[in-house]
Length: 342
Image 1 (tube, rainbow, N blue to C red):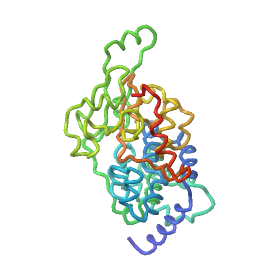
Image 2 (cartoon, one colour):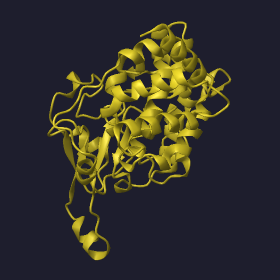
Image 3 (cartoon, rainbow, N blue to C red):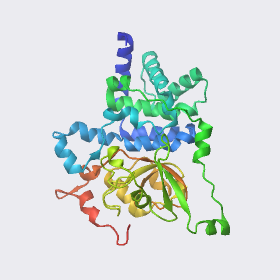
């Protein structure tokens, strides 16, 4: 990479660092209608999986091993160690090499100004889409992800990241068709739920990466009944492809992203919302949504087919946010689970 391009990228990287987490979420909310439905929730999920406050905790830790113990951090919580893998569930990831080049070109050609994040993301996505001769909606989400990734991992890691192509590449139309769920209403729907079993796909890139859930069964319980050695993929997965510990909503281990079919889960409860906030998994405006794309799998009951992606890490980030008389409130409240939760 030549000196001029490097200087432009460094300047643009510094520009991105100037925005706080609220600014990023506001930009994402503004851009959401401009992202194709195939990646709308996927983009929000990626941002939820990799929040800036997690990065801040890691960067400010004097002793990362001690911080891991205090916050019960498990799994791969370092984006710089798994950037390429982290974006595989986004349709737009197939354009990753082109996205990087578009970011480079924009950084060199533009002068960071008072314009917000959404403005820069839109400009890059428009230029990228023009070059690829595809709609901007196909690459707006992955462009937003790319800028946040650059801000978090730095130029060196960003520059060397690459995403393995999947063969054959499913088209956007094929993905939407595969994910589509058909729900019937009235008496027919009621009768169809008797002994009904649904598919929960947890990896779209590999065949047979799904398990069955009976009507009303929570995702975590259904996953735990799935045979296979998933610990080779993720040491947290002691039973099935979704990691868990308590199955009562008190540990946060089983959080997941719902790529498709979020309305085929039971509506989120006040308890589940509280737990998500307690663990630090809160993001954007999901508080107002009965079916958000981030859920605790032990609290979400299956009422239809769904496509999910498993969060790569878990912990209790709010142990640093809510301290009362020297004792972390977030941890203290974990024992207050309402009776009968499962």
